[in-house]
Image 1 (spheres, rainbow, N blue to C red):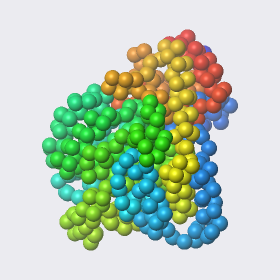
Image 2 (cartoon, helix red, strand yellow):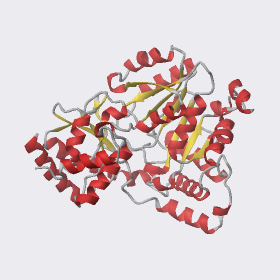
Image 3 (cartoon, one colour):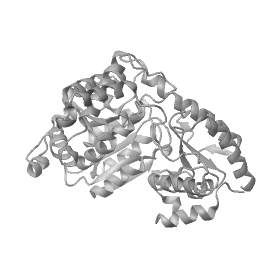
Image 4 (tube, helix red, strand yellow):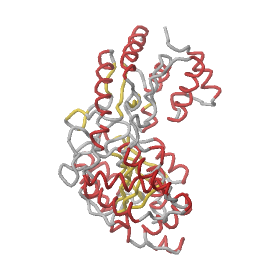
Length: 433
């Protein structure tokens, strides 16, 4: 017996003009689930959305409130960032990644989404022969949508089949064609939570330098590989990063997950000193500005939004400073996600489910914000559709570029009563399947 009538789900899908629930976006799945809850009164277990499930940083909230009271809401912020944020961002990168970057290259953006959008657009305009972005998948589906919006070609491969030394030949296969303008990846990875090894980051960095490809490293979940304690500023172990192996990088660091500050849409794009100051003739001819970093801020971000919320910049500066000073132990706070995921995985495995992307080369993936689940021989779309009838949501791994069958799940919004609820619903699911 289903928890929610299939007829209700199918009706909602039709009303929302979703052609196929199996290929629906994260936001579309969220809309279906919210409407199902409203119509039936059944509480769903929300595995679909990566929304922070912890309170926002008190440090950030306090600083932002004080900034608003001081009157910053009436003042346009400097387009490439207020001085305090740039200084503290540079310091934060040194403290937790051990990379030296000048404050000028730390530029605030309206979340990492705007940072990746600007980075992709800018990278695609440096050389007319380079018209393709390479995505190391599985990845965040919207970042491919950004390339489609821009009109840039897309190439991708599932890294699970090319870990370690195998990655070099695979990357070179793409880079040597001469059409790749940028390569984008995340580590820890959304959706699988795989983390790249130092050997793999070195390969990416070395080949990016050899073939002059811009590396866009999405560090939305930095320090969240909880197999290693990266909580102490200016002390090893540090967050692994491609910035240790190339000068051709942009690191995207977001407040959304590490500081639970998603609602204020604040991040920084950290452009290497070398790339920031590099001049491109194509940019000079098109915009009258040759330097990469200047074009990023004064052309792209200016035309997108005229800057980032002034008060949110004050908040992020305060959070970076407190973290670097050792006064704000943010890594300890977000470790809660790993505890939730560990417990959820135990329930899933007891009920016949499997972890689809389960290995980081030779060790189990870390427990963290995201994880992947499969069931018998069901493909991801079929599994997603069936789970929706049992009050459980997720997204099909196929939408992330993953080649393995299953769905992506997130532990962020799991409450204490959901564990028992999950167990009950999976038992019902098993009775039918």
